[in-house]
Length: 277
Image 1 (cartoon, rainbow, N blue to C red):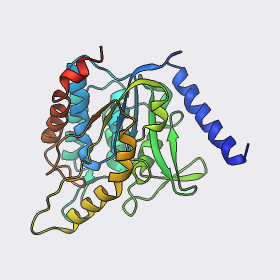
Image 2: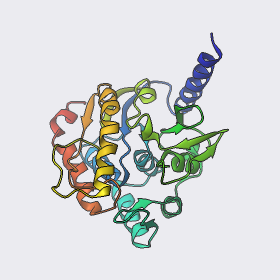
Image 3: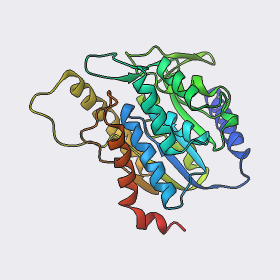
Image 4: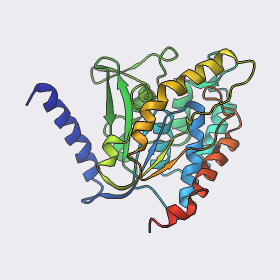
């Protein structure tokens, strides 16, 4: 066995051990949440919809914004509580204008959100097992984090290239998980009987006549992510793509509308979900 193969085996065993703390068998239902900037709020609507039809994920994986939403939910907050905390954090100016006409979560904003929601500092304190995907810029690989410091892992997973500096972590540099794996199914698929995927970056075929610089950037992100997300989606038993055609990735605009889009995506497949038993 090569050194590289041994490292992969060790990393897999660490993830597996973390999940085994909670259960000796496979988890009934897992949920994987894509990155997507502000559009990640739609994941909250997905979670609310699943709760309303009696489905609660027993394990969660996420990248970037999906990792943050997953962590806040895994800590015991309800989807609507998280939504209200995000609104409050935004209203206090912690979502700063980093680019003209755009809004992105800053490190200060995420830190404040974690404080407002009493997010635990370590993975081991969560009530639902969580896998966070990030990109290690040093090794050019996706890393899956499931134990140890939680806040640092989440901030690293959200570190958009060119906007935030990568986060120094365990000898590497963590950047946005969506760079290489925006729908991180690989590790959670191994430990779940049923896997639900939520992708908030569905491609659409229309653009305004006058396109702004940020709309170009948004479109480029979509193009970059589309193929890797499609390849991951085939591993999901149930796959959701909330309709967010007019919701920008780089601006927190009308969070209630995004929440409702996620909720409607679940209700559109309600009968299928109910057959899960």
